[in-house]
Image (cartoon, rainbow, N blue to C red; front, side, top):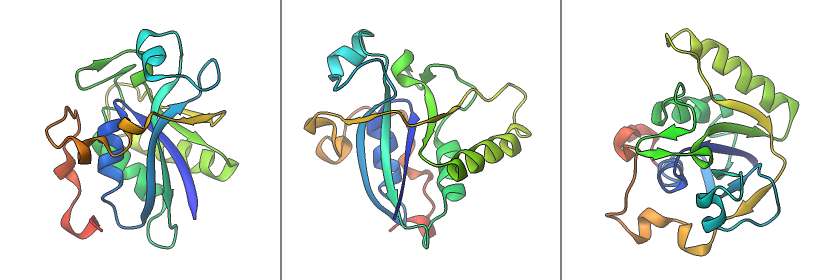
Length: 165
């Protein structure tokens, strides 16, 4: 099993989207790469904590590759939007790929270079080493399962039938 942490706006929709995919074993919502340990949602929303709302994705690389996960990631975000996805605006909504190995870094950078050819504007998705990931509060985990009418900037129907578990 492998893990990657992705930030693409509000973590509720990102988690709900990725948990549908064949090969994704587990997901969790959390806070990545900020200025102090164990931030709360309130601290992140108020800008006291500089973490990104992010999703940790555990996947079986025999069933889905990192490249395929990145393809899905770019399907659900606007990679040219800085600190904003959908109606969510602020530092915590920045888009990022947080890696733990040099191989993951290389895959992410290569993917973005190829993807840039499809955009007139510059892609602003950051590729950074994962410095920390803190699990968000329990009520954020599987939020859209618990609250089916909850806000989501992502079209969860973008997963194709043959990609669903």
